[in-house]
Length: 167
Ligand SMILES: Cc1cc2nc3c(=O)[nH]c(=O)nc-3n(C[C@H](O)[C@H](O)[C@H](O)COP(=O)(O)O)c2cc1C
Image (cartoon, rainbow, N blue to C red; front, side, top):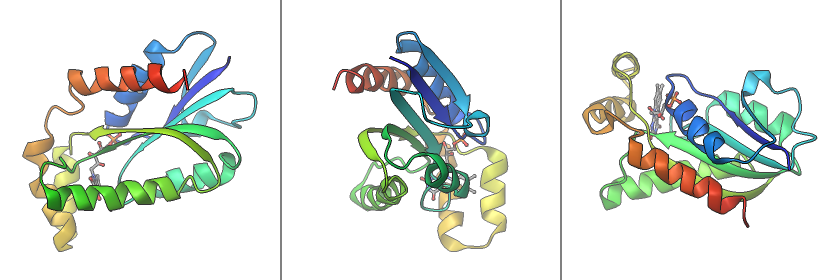
């Protein structure tokens, strides 16, 4: 089996999840950011990850998936700021994850792992400067995101990877 873990990450959270997944995969395996992937052909099992930006998948993920992912079997992983700690946050997170799934419309999704990722101070300041109320609300969530993905979440990502490759 040839495994690929490919990801897009602005501030390193999704990369940490990618590395955790990569650790537990058996050889033969590769870990690459999207911009180092020329094709998904030749891999038997593909993990693809990105953060949620502005309520859905970032443009880089949409472009990558539409270029490479049609007809492929893919396990997804996603990081996000929303804690999902109350019903309102759960509904919002559910919608955002739904948009992420839609970006894989032409692929077979084998599984989805998601966890919180720290919203950096720089990113929070940028969100505040947009003056868009919903984005400013995300900035206010920063204290709830600090330290994520944490060791327990990275362990969950390893457990996910181990389980999904056995399906
Ligand atoms: C411009 C911007 C927009 C964001 N929008 C959302 C969002 O709509 N929903 C959410 O849950 N998190 C949002 N986030 C938080 C990121 O998804 C989170 O911090 C993620 O872990 C970043 O991953 P990375 O370090 O791999 O880039 C946003 C972050 C930035 C910088």
